[in-house]
Image (cartoon, rainbow, N blue to C red):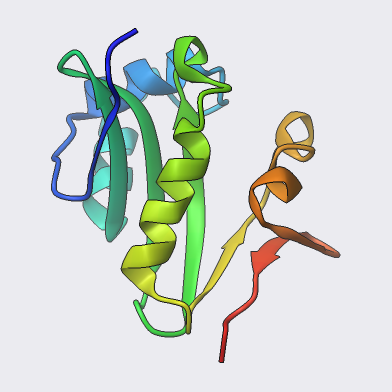
Length: 133
């Protein structure tokens, strides 16, 4: 397998996002490219994982970079799962928003067991990494 490279500066097309969503198994509106374009345009933090010139993972978030960050999408191509790509993407986002910001997400039931393994803590309606201060 190719080496995985992580980036915060990459621009994705709606088609690239749809393709990685499909390959990951995450349920997103992959056939609605205009909607995916809006998702990319209005999210303000996008971490990506690349291998062999192809995007193999994304972490798409909405944040104020000081207090809170909502991680709305964490998707990794099934061929790259169980290699630490998802965890590395979360760490990339966490580093970017800083320890004063909480990281919150809502997990799909089939993914819920994954998040405690990478540092998330259960809350009644989602998962959270608490602010350090």
